[in-house]
Image 1 (tube, rainbow, N blue to C red):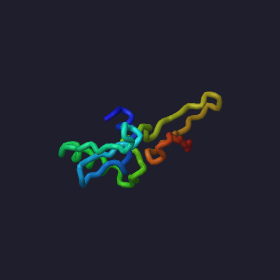
Image 2: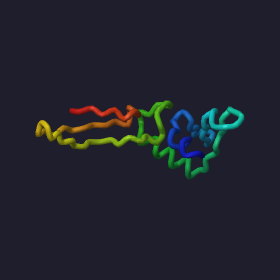
Image 3: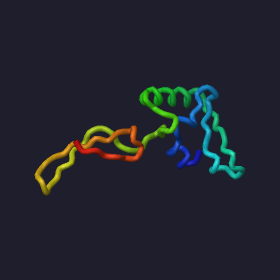
Image 4: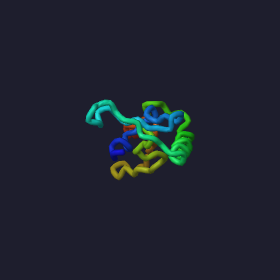
Length: 98
């Protein structure tokens, strides 16, 4: 797989039943896409990873790139501290201050 194909892989491209990944049509000379077979170990690891995202949707990325959890951000101008929360659900890196 190309780096960008792996980085941008979505759950809708993973077929556990046929043990294969399908990469986008624009990445091949013929323009039809291609199926990449998965061995049993890859299927098991992807299955484990899928279980960590129970609300995943076919359009969600398999490997979300954004950080998630809590982080503190100090505002020197106001002398205050804010808590920043990020979610892997957004996939666009939205940050909300609480």
